[in-house]
Image (cartoon, rainbow, N blue to C red):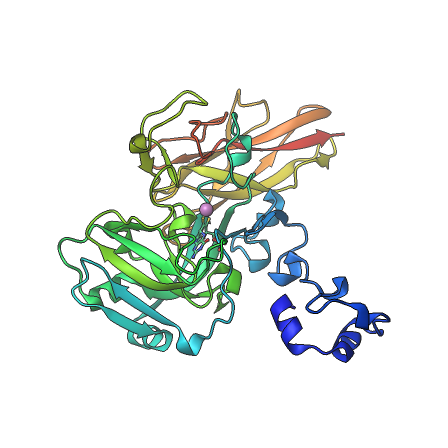
Length: 406
Ligand SMILES: Nc1nc2c(c(=O)[nH]1)N[C@H]1C(S)=C(S)[C@@H](COP(=O)(O)O)O[C@H]1N2
Ligand SMILES: [Mo]
């Protein structure tokens, strides 16, 4: 229950009804005080998340999965990470929800209701990998400020919606178009209604890809509120910050979009590699586009115990931004030698791919299984932390799990 609804709607008798017993000194409670027993529920039930998820922040809410929770090939809501920059919009009414397309490079300005979007344009469903640019940040040294994501800020759900391209073409795109920028209904943490928490976008070329969707469903149901209900931009393979939640306006820009979190060092890395800890001028920071090749061993859970002589089945996912993963390998000797895994193709472009292997161990003792993916351009995951950068983005080092053979 939300505090506001509570103070508006409940009598003391109502409170007693909810708690199940009378509040003995209820008359002594200050006006507007919310009894502990009725304070906001834990975030897991609030957002329908599994209690094994890790909460990294509550203002704003940020939550990640542990590797073993991401074992499904299609990520269910309960294991999907939450990354908010502001406050989740309340009182969303889909009957009144509209999407306006405007901007310097829009031929006209048009507004669509959700119903119009759904009925006027063909609908498509794709499984799309969304990884936060800061996934893996916790390993950076010197450390980077922000949510200390470990490995679980990645998901691959099934998104249904209309192609952004079809809607933009319906509005008309001028030749001058360079970028699109999204605007959303979430509100700034400061409470200032004129401030947007985040307004990012992608180059027009990415906006016009088949798989770039204006989605209204996730895994066959309405998108959960915290993931962008009722309308979300989904740009698979790119930092998930480009996938605007609660989208109500999109601008076709004649320059690189300049909304909050587009400039400075936000979602940018040094254009040239630098030594850890180096200060970099803003003009030498470049916008992150396609995410780098990466993989996650989602089974077994780290710490598994295996009897000697029994092979261990491992499996997980691999993805490579705009590219496909063409090779997946594992190592049990700290990266000295590598053995190929069986790797499946993606169900569609920009979806993660499943891998599996049967791992044999030579004798009793402690092992680590490391996973390494290689993309279609021949780039592999690094074994150690790659390219230090001030904000701690793009850590795609090999994932590893600990195993004891007994
Ligand atoms: N409107 C809006 N869209 C947003 C954000 C946000 O705070 N507000 N966060 C972005 C970031 S940084 C990420 S990583 C993804 C997270 O998506 P999820 O919470 O659905 O997993 O949403 C992106 N879209
Ligand atoms: Mo993010």
